Image 1: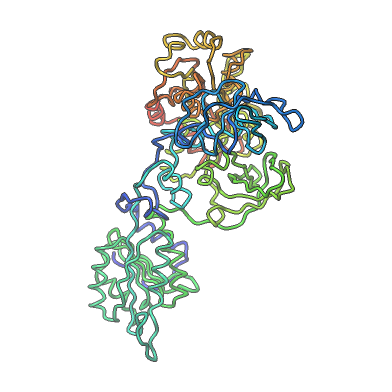
Image 2: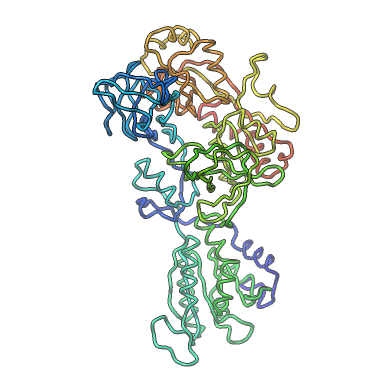
Amino acid sequence: MKQRQFLHTVERDEAERRFREALGELAEPDPEVLPIDQALGRVLAADVSSPIDVPGFDRSNMDGWAVHAADTHGANEHQPKRLKRASQAVTMGAIPQAELHPGEAMAIPTGGPVPRGADGVVMVEDTELIDDQRVEIRRAVTAGSHITFAGTDIARGETVLRRGAELTSRELGVLAALGLSEVALRGQPQVAILSTGDELVALGEAISAGQVYDSNAAILAAAVREQGGVPHQLGIAPDDVAQLSDILARAIAEHDVVLLSGGTSKGPGDVNGQALQAIVEPPGIVVHGVALKPGKPLCLAVSGKTPVVILPGFPTSAIFTFHEFVAPLIRELAGRRATAETTVTAKLPIRFRSAPGRTEYSLVHLVTDEHGELLAYPIGKGSGSVTTWSHADGFFAVPRHVEQLAAGTEVVVRPTGGARPRQPDLVVIGSHCVGLDVLIGLLAEQGLESKVVAVGSEAGLLAAERGACDVAGIHLLDPDTQTYNRPFIKEGVELIEGYGRLQGVVHRSGDRRFEGKDATTAVSEAIGLPGITMINRNRGSGTRALYDQLLGDARPAGHSVQASSHHAVAAAVEQGRADFGIAIDVVTRGRQLGFLPLTDERYDFAVPRGRLGRPAVAAFVKLLGDPRTHQLLAARGFTR
């Protein structure tokens, strides 16, 4: 049937339903690979995983002196500490060969690689060079101060950008930081734009009485670009059915979408409708007339698989109906998501500390709690991070005289993309895991957008108890029962079983202090040896509890240095900054690392019971029960 209705007006939603039903499943344009300097505004065709660690080495965040943090304890303006100046100084672009010994300080520039042995950096403003041999330290630092550890920002093998991401300067910065010169992009829909009417004149030509300039073509071309399509202006066609039919047939054969404007009405002057009716293939014209003001003469058709839309001739009507019916279609073909609104006010779910004396801007994740209130979770990776800006939803400003904002404080958040960010379908707060990436990727294939806020198991469970998330990833071991997760579940929270993973001691391949031993024996012997250095995990993480059990009261060098992820632990050990740490076996793949199994643990999910009925949560739970999901997890090294 070539024509279901001819200027028999239908409601807007009914028109859209008929149009979408006729279109069926949209075919994606063929992907293409382009240099990243041509990728702005485009959409990723595939996930991007990092080929390197970023940063690739432990680096200083400021000019100063690399030290053993313990050597500075107690130092202040009135009672400074004096350290021996190391014979070497850190230079940019080269890893220091000399190890920093206790009692020494080594000059280091901002961004310089931290020498082995150092676990903190004192700002140059807090020091004074007494002579060529001595440095006076006037402020104490703790382990990890002013250092960004290797792999903390981006870890090798980590998925940093996902298929479907729209590339702005933020995402391009991430690609550049990874050293990628080109990227696979989703193809852009090719959109034909044809204006019709004997009264139309091309821009720049002389105009006579009774004629009008063809403004619709320019407006529509710009609108198509805004939505991610490539416009092809075919010029102006006369009010001649035969000639117009010929042009229209070629346009349908050569383009993904065809737009016409003008010449559609209920009378004999409806040249566009007549021309389309003459050559259109089934399903054909599905709507001709929509109950809109402006926009009533709108005609929607599908020829084979190609959408053809005849927009009204008046510019206001044309652009209005374009945005109502065509813009979403082009965005979908281009792989783009719906645009969002601007301006938001949100509450801080946690206390926020600010350094006095400067106006501070804090990047945030925006999530919604069980009462529908918007929460702004500050992102704390720091100014050297590449991914922070990319993953942030917005930022708020803290006045320079304010040192602290209490939990519950309302802040005005300015979206980073210039528009209010679209709320994700699923919010996951808690411990991060590579296996979680698999689940989030499967949800993305279903068209569900997820936001992951990695804050550790304890903070994630607290967020679930407060109803501040949909799902919390946790792996908490109860020392009394030696049971994971269930003993920590309180009323109002449901535990959804996830998967198993193997935690163990990570060391460099060939290290005889660890090779061939079980994890407990290797660590108990190693921590008594001179020169051994460990790397710890952040407080509140499930892995930190394993360290505490394994070490007991022992506090070897590096105990105060807290990595924020399994990847960061693996990077520290592989690069020699530490000799051992605890991580899951999955992150050792592709690295020159040995692994001593320690425990099979459960990585499960706490879900507020009030959110179990949400579609995205239901989809997430269904995935966890799907054998195919666990096959994918098993391929990554996880167990049921």
